[in-house]
Length: 505
Image 1 (cartoon, rainbow, N blue to C red):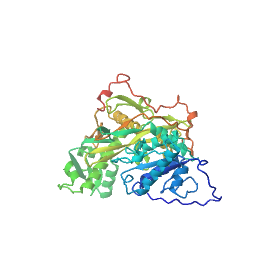
Image 2: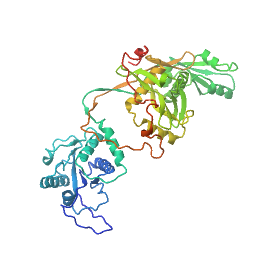
Image 3: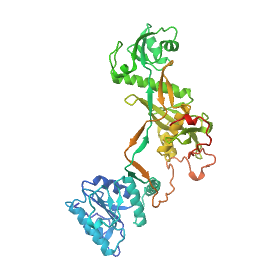
Image 4: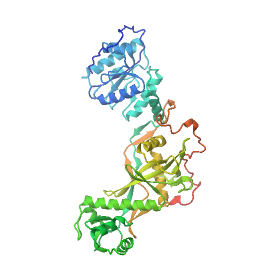
């Protein structure tokens, strides 16, 4: 990498400083240009946010200080830690600038006997490490950048590399402390991954198309108001419901007639039949809408409440629907557990509710895609409808929720709705139903992420949860009164009401 250092203009005259008086404070990024530019920018910006004085040819940043006349002076007199980024490009002999900088840094390390002056960062799997660096301990970024960055921050802290005040420092320390407990590595081992896709096991065998001799507006009005899942297309009502169910759902003054009875498979695929043939995409959209309406009826009949959001309807668990607002279930390994579905948090007594939204999908495999949500009430009666306020509350409440928190609450709610049975049924009119598996689809990953304990942990600084709108002051919160979000597992033999055994396998 060929680098030419520029002189920054300053209001005061530059005063030469001897190497003995200079405090080393710069984190120097050595990398291959342009091959490793993306990583260098990513790393440099985060180190700057953490308060470090970073220099690279991309950032050209030393915290407001002047640049030096040449690389030799920068590395020799001002650099506290030299970070060579090891990649297939950087170890290439044609990258003379990269290797020249490493040579200078190696000479400085030996001359001044500087421990931990050079910290190699391994970005890729490479055939060999440069000879000057082969005996140094490197930080591995090959598994994931965040893991490597957390280790680098720890190394810089231990080396007492100087930092400057930065509003992002507290946030970066908090991130590092939290990430340290999640730090892990990837191993070549299969892992079972659980999705939020619940398979639709079967649909009714036929779909029905009805007509009526009444005038067009009256007939379309009846279709739009009838309490069974249906759609109007070409003056026809399309539904899975039987003739008796349709006639019972409409006014006696509106006679109906079954015009066509089409195999569901043919209808979805756009296969020609006696009735009007729709494109496969249009037919799937119709059946998707029928399933969505079936879900709405199912959710309402089981006591869930509708909450309209910007992205669509969410069905949440109201207070008192479940005993102590808890849902029991068995996880993917068969272990009996419980999760709370709602509660009160903070000195403002914000009430929260867990909810889900459902989107049917009829490309293979047929499934219900289920998303988790949190709804809030600040007065104990009405839900927060303002989008920005709701988002702020979600960030506050759910910032400590990880994948297992959402996954377990989803499994718990589905277990309750299905009465801990292996399937549940969406009503589609009369006796017509769609059967859904309560066990979500699982996938096999060829790799596994293995969590390990960090060598040491950085203590997180206390920060305001929401500086723009104080919702809760953790020191003032009354844990004894709050509904606990940190749910405990159930012992297999404890508090088991006998229904869990038929739950999710």
